[in-house]
Length: 243
Image 1 (cartoon, rainbow, N blue to C red):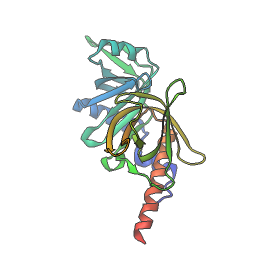
Image 2 (cartoon, rainbow, N blue to C red):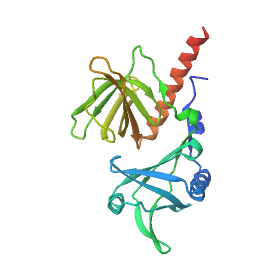
Image 3 (cartoon, rainbow, N blue to C red):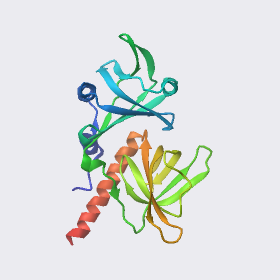
Image 4 (cartoon, rainbow, N blue to C red):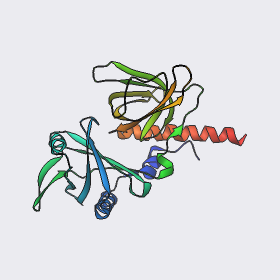
């Protein structure tokens, strides 16, 4: 593994950018009736849906089962689609979902995305980070109140795992308004996410917990930066094992 992959090489490996590739993938998901989770309102709301049709002028997807959630989606500025066909993580963002009549049933429409993240199983597993000089994650709510400041255990473009001493002051399903990680002196990640799991790993004392958080609407530039960081860590790890 090389630690010197260029941004272009990372683009080629993990992102679909060509319109025909994007259309083919989306229509394949529609043909297979693959379940799709659609997150909005900064990750606080979501619906379960299926893609219906993808054309150059936009993407059509089904209404969710909760009418109140459908109305909130209709009023949102952007949303994030996630699916895992055959264990491959597919994720993309869209803006301004519009509700309309598709044939004799209602559906949603969004402009065609200009890029899709596609990760094989082995690529979307979180990579464990070094314990020595570990990087930290700072969590805060929309008002800036700190929810946690913890060392990272693992990281991927999909999310993170953090190690917490004592029971964390967040719960499963909570939306986190600000997740801040300094990947390097010059690269700062700041995005929203959702708490996906909280597990106790050591019951002694106040207990130690592992908290897993999924990123929502991670900016493209940070997806690339995280991949570069993970490649660098893996390269250094393999060099040590080779000695």
